[in-house]
Image (cartoon, rainbow, N blue to C red; front, top):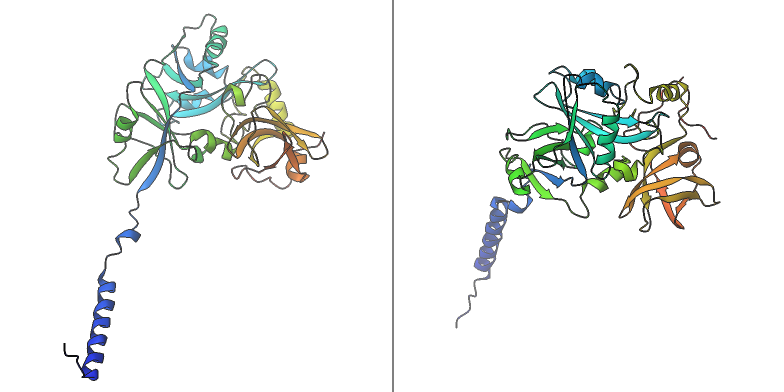
Amino acid sequence: MKLCTNFKLLRKMRMHIRNLRGLASLMRIPSARTVTGQQIYTLESLGNRELIRVHGSDVIPFLQALVTNDMSQMQSSSGPSSMYGLLLNQSGRVLYDTIIYRTNNPDTFLLECDREASPEFRRHLRTYRMRKHIDIDSVDDEYGTWVLFSTKADSLASSPNPDLFVSRDPRLPALGTRVLAPTDMTWTQLVKGFCRNKEFSASPASPDSNYQLLRYKQGVGEGSLELPPGRCFPLEANADYLNGVSFHKGCYVGQELTARIHHSGVIRKRYMPIRLTAPIGANQEVKSVAGARLGRVFGAAHDHGVALLRIEQVLNGRQELVVDDERCFADRPEWWPEEQPGKRRMAFAE
């Protein structure tokens, strides 16, 4: 075999090959780096929630006398499609949380409640029905509640599928979108109801992305386990920050004490998110390192939880917190409004 001895020619050939490689790299389509713009959501069935139908010609004044929010806003077709509210006992403490949905029938509303508390919830409503023309029944065999959320995309406000009722969560944008769907509709069918939007993509709930964990990171309690009946006041449950109470409507059960607390500005405890360093069970007491009782955890999952804590000592006192002998940390929710100068402070030490 003869070797080429023209070194000048060899150098030129090598330079030519390098140039071709450089040109090829510039012309290569970077498919692996392409950003599609597709918004990924988590779609989850809320099996622990149940829908109650309240129907009758007196439905607006009936609910207006029971819930903390102003039902008159839902009378208008231009009003909100859903509303957050609480039902209180005579002492002004929270009994049940609910999201109220407007339907096409002005005399019919759907009230979402905790499934475990559904019998007591309906019994409570019937107690105040008296002579009003009101029907109260569960639609659990007709409709189910789903939630659609994303930590990186805006909540959806509509669906091209006419069988779905879609409404942004009335409490916080971060909590995503509530979807009411027929009970026989599967997860796959429900996804197809949104997929006409080419930028939409959904995945099922996972240990790292689920509605309970989402709420805990935001510090939002929900249901009878996290909002035990008779244990807290509506402002301690952040109803004023979650669009869940009206201070301008007329009387309702528990209204007097709620208004008094609001106007006094003295709110010693509030629900807030906590970060855990070890797994714990629910209903655990939160203490300072010195042993002072500062609150209680009502829900925990992985390394997050939701707790009712004393504001002054936890956030302003900067005390080290422990729960079940393990370190934990309390966070001020980003959605809490800033305190306005000149107004009375919202937290006082006892």
